[in-house]
Length: 229
Image 1 (cartoon, helix red, strand yellow):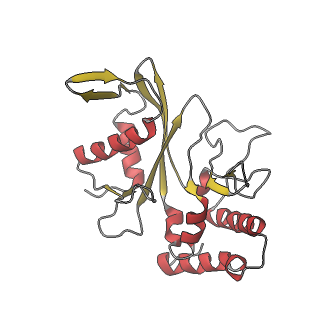
Image 2 (tube, helix red, strand yellow):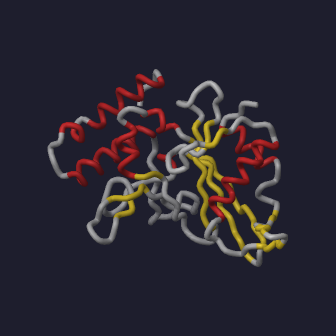
Image 3 (cartoon, rainbow, N blue to C red):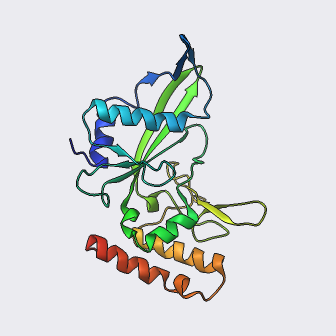
């Protein structure tokens, strides 16, 4: 059965995902053990979602390359639409997951600009006393969970040694806004523009690929989707 990301989100909410509790258990050599470590919760929630979709007869095909985006393909007729990324974080702390790998993402946008419309299904979990709870669940686009930082127009994680940009990182999109809040980008186009400004600042050169990058992405998005960026 085909379901888009929004339909999956609504089904999870209606199933009571935010009002239920569960456990994480490993069984080996006939011995069961409940886990209370948060180290693998994100990956296990993704595996659980795969089984939940299968049980509910929802078409959700995992990416064979687990190191690349997206995590799931939801459209049986296309690998260019209905792409789903699954993220999770400790609800009692700020989001600390990687939104995307910086280098591979900006390069992919040149030829696969449709990935801008990937949906992010985000689990905010709490694991305490061996009990797992999904305290909240969000469905977002990349520009709705990212923003600028003091260093770059798009918030990124840099290596400590040589300040190489490694990952695009999320903001606290789920917190109540105040005068010090960093607002997410208002649109897909604003996000791409900020990413271009980040590239121009980071690469520090007149490389034509970088200079013309925004126009390249804009043209490619129109080519794949028939819509303006």
